[in-house]
Amino acid sequence: MTETIRVLIVDDHAIVRRGIRALLAEVPDIEVVAEAADGRAAVAQAETLHPHVILMDLMMPNMDGIDATRQIVARLPSCRILVLTSFATDDKVFPAIKAGALGYLLKDSSPEELVEAIHQIHRGESSLHPLIARKVLQELTAPSTRPPTPDPLSAREMDVLRLVAQGMTNQDIAEKLSISEATVRTHVSNILNKLHLATRIAAALYALREGLVSLDGVAGPDDAPDSDD
Image (cartoon, rainbow, N blue to C red; front, side, top):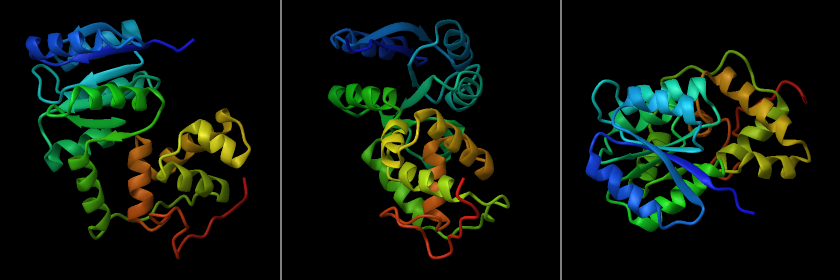
């Protein structure tokens, strides 16, 4: 039986929340468990209800969506954040991704795109609006001023990072490398810790930008894994 996806809607406009709730009520495997009108309420609702997916607006009173995302991801890593906003500026996109959002969708997206994004986020995949995806690609081509991580990734961590950069889920990576999902999760956690990043998307961006992997998943010319663990 297909798991019902529990969704928390966070937006400071009641009409937006009601519209999304009405839309999702028509989707058999999605259940809206609560609504929140600001980031502070979102954090409280998330801690109480443990939703699978949180639709997060960014510009809200009391606490904005970026701070709320950061707090929820830190406290409840199993909750997956899909930003749903009208803003596509760099000062919103990249901080939201760095804070831990797994997806970024604009409010001019179609109902079908929203439903598909929720399913992708629930599966642990990233979901980016085409405009946001273009920004990400532009970011990848910009010159980097960030120093490389002082703690080199192991050979196995590099294997995992290459597959993360290709958009694979933990299950996909486990099957590809013939290891358990728990081991994949451990490697991903180690990668994020070593790179001082919060999310898989951020790790993939870092890896591509720094030349640790290339766009086709092949190791960059300066890659030199330090071990086989």
